[in-house]
Length: 445
Image 1: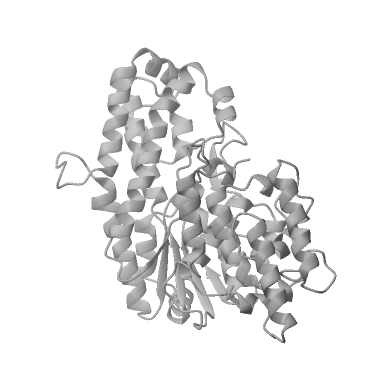
Image 2 (image 1 turned 180 degrees about the vertical axis):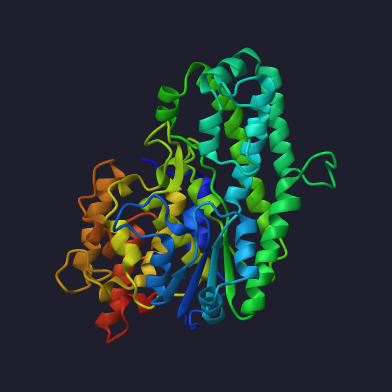
């Protein structure tokens, strides 16, 4: 099971779940209007018809009107241009917004890295026949890499010349993550190009609406694979290249997260998607692959989030905002419809459970605390939970449906266990003596 955590990770999740929310806003605040800005991740690129992007899920959670202006391919400079000369519609939406959710920076990093790598490929002679350095776009994409680079020639070169190739890759990493104060000879692209642009974006949003709270997202590392997939798929020269590139992906996305959190954003909130997507179990596995299509088609290497990924991002944004819902249950319905949620990674699952617990299941179908479905919350439900826990603790399936699991998971953590059973008994004792609060109200869920 991919949910098993090390002792340190378990303690961290338990401490986090003990808090009502990680955001700084109060539960009494009303959210009526949300604006989403940014790139393909925010736009929902790649989702199938009928699937929901995270902006829709967050808006539903708060019962808010949500306007999404995100556009696939947009970098920070594109968003600045939109905010500097906004359309009447965009200007009005931001002026009315309670929250502005922003996903940006990924295309900046992709363009910088692609431009650098294409120049390296040109220098070592592995561009496709007929192409030269003059054909390299200023802001290339993954599609340009595929269009211009002779993959087999690159893999052969990298395998035969690992030292100079790795030296080029390490220089790329330095050019992106280093800071000028320590490494003045490097470009320091995140510090000197991307973060200042995001600070400009923040200032432009605040100029349009000083009262809006802005939420920025960190960027997940796309080059995390299931171990069995990686071992079977990347062999020989392909593995040599990927082994050089994967540490760069990890270093760059982690550095972006750290520098975004240090940026001068005037009280904006940071939804740390990077950490939730990089869930760890006690084997040290990393799970961003679970939330993307990176393993679906090797030739495509689609790093965009799937429906599962959009649920995880929505949960992280909601948890970061830190305000209880207005009755929207789209996040729960979307999660329950996922086909692969049995192995939902632990860190992201803890965030989801904390958020989903506030959707008051007693108002949306099976009552929270009543997993046996008889309409009462009593000792029978406690025994029902313990029986399911006994099965799961021995490695068997708990036998609970998705709806029963939601009703049984009282404390909203990643487990259905004796703690939940004890909370049911505590609530049963309370109502047996005349208490009138719902179980959510009694435990302040």
